[in-house]
Image (cartoon, rainbow over all chains, first blue to last red; front, side, top):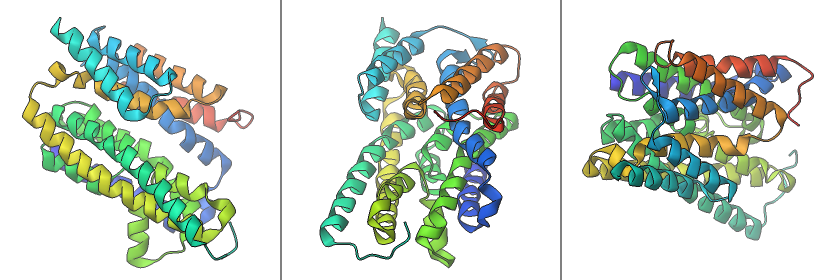
Length: 99
Length: 234
């Protein structure tokens, strides 16, 4: 099942990229389509941040992940690069996990 | 972006340098993906297959973000999330097609490396003409491809060797990674509103809806906000 997921999502995402290159320009160039496609990552990434920070299956919990993400926000506000943000969150969560 | 002006060697080298250093930085991040994939039960080969075949960071994180895929409904959630996040690459392709003007196998290769970074570097060379844009696209895209895949394998093998993901904070690394991808996009009122609406959607739906549905439902926020004409990015 994991392999099927990996392959289907890969093929689908490739076709999206290829479609953009091969399609007549008019199909995708409507401002509405552009606006929605630009906002789509914002919506999904926000949703994923919340789901991954507070979700365990179908329950909301507040645990060391929230602290890790809190530290990530601080580090982002300090304009740290990507890998630093991820490592800061991981270290915070790992330390709390051990307490 | 119209003229086929000659690209001076000095500019070509500068673009190469910029592209490769960006590729390396982004590629490093593949370590986090490899580790996250491993904590979701993917083998190193499966993690590497995603990086090689899917090759789009946010979509890849969406696949592994659903956790261990134990049912078809989780698989569908993973795939839908990846595809929704991948829609923007279609727009990048549309933007790059007249610049690259490639066909056949070269178009297949170009499509595969059409991502945030390659498109971004290409577009930022617009003032230098088409050859500069093409050079920026290929250098950055191929560079990210090489580094991203290498570091994915490294992260997956490393995490596999370490064991329990929570002990190393990997459970917090995944949402932090999403946050890192989201951050630069939160410019202006509309993105903030969409982000908040999506977050609230998840908080409300998560205890009631099947796993995965809350995240995918948040796409509605983007559709509603993008549908209306007056709302601009600013």
